[in-house]
Length: 310
Image (cartoon, rainbow, N blue to C red; front, side):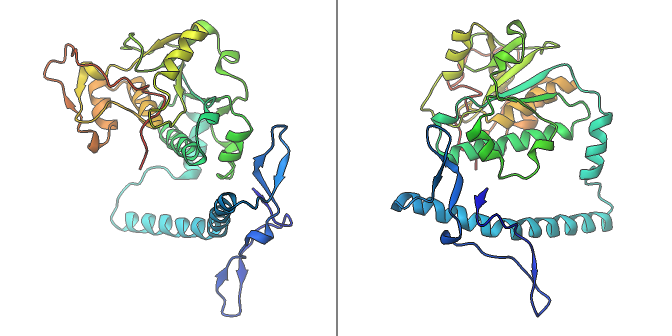
C-alpha cells in the first residue's frame, strides 16, 4: 500500500532466535497510494500538520500489521486446540470453506452493496463500510445456501480501502466498477430503504436487492430512496414494524440487512430472523400485534447506514 523502496516485509530471526519485523518510519515512505490528485496521480508525502498526523497513524498500522496477523493466527490455533480437547465443533475451517464454495448451490437472489457514496464519507467511515462488507462475506460463505454477492461502483477509492485486506480479489464476491444499473436489468432491481412505502414480505427469484454502502451519521437522510426514485427502479423496506418492537431507533447496519435477507432466503421466518440478527442493545422483542403495527420506522435509510458500528 505504501512505497518504501518496494521491499516486502519479511520476518527477521535475531541472534536470540526471536522473530521480529522491520519497522517503517515516516521518512521511509515517499508515496501513499491513498492520496491522489483529480487526475488520479499519486501525491508525494504530505507535510501539513493534519496530514502528517494521518500519515503517522498509517505508518503505525503498517508496522503492526504483520505482527497482528501472526498473533491472530496463534489465537485461532489455540482456540482450535481447546475446542478439540472439549469436543466442541467450531465449524468448517478455511480450507473446507473454499472447497464447499464450489459445491454449494446458490440461491438465484443477489445482494448488491452500492459503493457510489464514498465521496460523502470520511476515511474512518469508509473503513467501517469495508468492515461491514467483510462480515457479510463471512456470513454468506458459511451459509448452507449462500446468495450471489455483488459490489457495485467499486472505484479507485474503494479499491484502496479494500487493499488493506490481502487477497480480497479471490473472495467469492463479484466486484463491478460500474453501477448496478449497468449490471442487472432495471426491472430486476429493488433498492432496500426504510423511506419506501413498500413493505417486502417475500424475495423474488432472479432479482438484485441493493444495499446502500453509506455511514453518514444521519447527514444524508433518505438518500437511497431518492436515488431509487430518480433512477426509476423499485424500492422497498424490510417488515420491521410488523414483527418486532425495538427500544432504539430502527437503524440497521449493512451486515444486519444482509444477514436478515440471507436468513429469510434460507427459510427462516421473518420474526425469528430479526430476533436472531439484531443485537441485544437494540432491545428487539416480539410485537404485541403481529398482524401489523402502525408505529413508524425512524425514517433513516435502513441501508444508507447511519449507525456507528462499535
